[in-house]
Length: 385
Image (cartoon, rainbow, N blue to C red; front, side, top):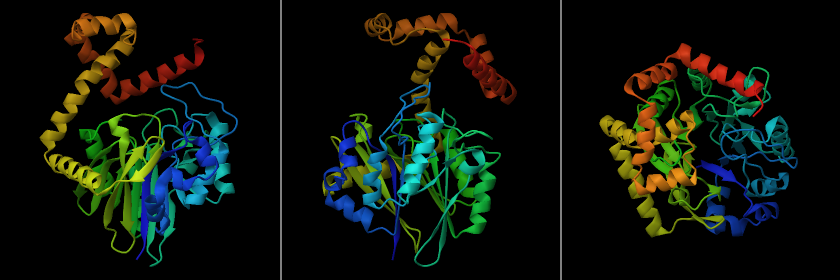
């Protein structure tokens, strides 16, 4: 019997980069994780940082990650077979950063999927032939951020319903099982949005047997749908960028290559390292995971829970679009004193119902949305800020 171990975000950071370079596996992972990973037939992780020794950070929203090429020593020593590069950070150090990452992986005989020199390369799946001669196809894609490949430009494979679903369907005809690693969903949110649930279900309908979303940095929930399983949020494997409670736990997913049954293996972040959860923590993590999994069987729950998330986020988005500096000391002080009513008052002065309806139409109508995005790109490329 064999298994594929799938882990999510696996990133060297300043706090443990030297440990990665020096292959301090026991320190980084502990003996239990080492045994679990090494005993697998195949090992797959999300490499959510460029590996390069010549930083050239791009201009983007959010942090531009980077790790030295020597950190590959730990990936190689751990026996990692495949990494997905379909994420929102693979282009953080530009084309040269992605090129260095791919060269470093190739030099260390580690395969990759989900990125390439152009969109054609990025869309290519990866094939695993198991001990029992079953063929498993792995397809990786990401939501549209600053990492996406173009017709003639490098980057990650974007999720595109006009292309991706057909590619997954074709892959299902060539293999016994299909695993889709989808880098998407709202960060620090343990449930699927209505759109994410609809999207992942459609991926199953097109022939995938397992869909794992890997962007949320927290453990979410799972759903059995038709012939497949969807995991909405796997949490990190090892990514020491936050001490948030969401970042403290994750799941390794073991896929039996004979039966294609899944086992969820809870892990816990300890400072700048990770360990297998003990019996008590494992029970707590899995019970909460199952509770959320039961909750999303009710579509009304999915919608209501997402509404709770969306309303406060609206004020953040609206401040950005209105030019209000919601991070200023004055703004935060006034909000604290007035229980956030000051910020809402300002926004209500700018956004009446008529204006909200017009903005909704611009964003959700495909023709307006496409024109808006292209205009923003042209403006930001031409203007000197």
